Image 1 (cartoon, rainbow, N blue to C red):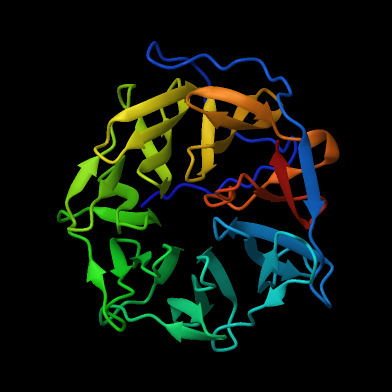
Image 2 (cartoon, helix red, strand yellow):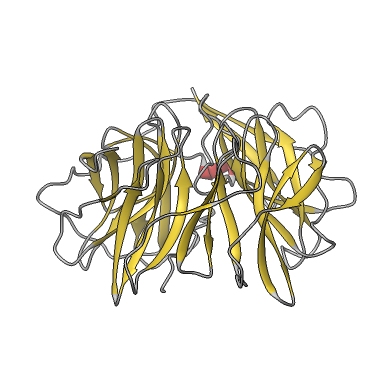
Amino acid sequence: MPYRAKHYVVGAVAVTMLAGLSATTAQAAPDRSTCSWTVRTLPPAPGFAQSLSYGTDHGSHVFGMATNDSGITESPAVWNIDGNSPPRLLGSAHGSPTRIMGLNAAGVAAGYYRDSTGAHAVRYVNGAYQDLPVPAGTSYAEAVDINAGGDIVGTVDNTSIIVWPADKPGTYTLLPRAAGDNDEATGIDNARNVVGIVAQGDKLAGYIWNAAGRATALPAAEADAWVDPVGIRNGRVIATEKGFSNDSAVVYDLTGRPQWRLAQHYAESMNAAGLVSGFHGVPDGAIQRLLRNGKVVAPLPSEQGFGATGWPSALTDSGWLAGDIDSHVTVARCS
């Protein structure tokens, strides 16, 4: 299955994008500063010279990695956004390379570790890693997101979406899929709605599954385009529609109905209030922006070297955006 790449765009890092406009999409307004940015670089982890954000708990913490070799090896870490203390290092699962993909406000994290036999889904709770159960014979399992209640979603063997319910520890549910499909999870909300991608032969499509497992396709405006959902928050799905002549940031409701669409933009994260971070492609790179209701709110403070990272949970519900400056975890807020 041709999975989408995670975009960590910093400053004017070049990206390959297809540009164009659909008759049903809004035109992007010119960038203008409509706010004052507060930028705060968070303390380094003791013994580490570099760090990178992977996301937030939607509240007061950033999670990511501490490293000394630009991420060749990494140590999972959690920072407090107030920046008053060094990050908490989580260590590794079974002494193997470990990556955290999601964190909730209760401090429970979800992710995976790798060893010689494959990838293995784990959660981190009460100071220790726990293996998550998977079907017999599974060699590749990643937990990719966790909701406020501790429900975790992931992908097994690059074919099936798996949910680990918090109220039934030690169990899992595989979401229904058609024969021959390959499904990939990208997010879960507090009502256990799940978003992800389905590969049907050489075609890709975005879907939302409700808590009962019923699937709804996310429609694309352009023929032959496909929808890449990156997250789900508070009754909204944030996605990028990827077409031959168009790439558009799109927000859907839980029925799959588009709420707004902004052409020539990629979506990266969204908070509970519907504020979106994303980027606009230009010939020599990309311009990162905040978006809301199909309009550009403001460009990111790139003149300070800040670049948003931590897709797809980079934005907290209070508006802090996680990123980095010169390989140091940084947060910024527009006010």
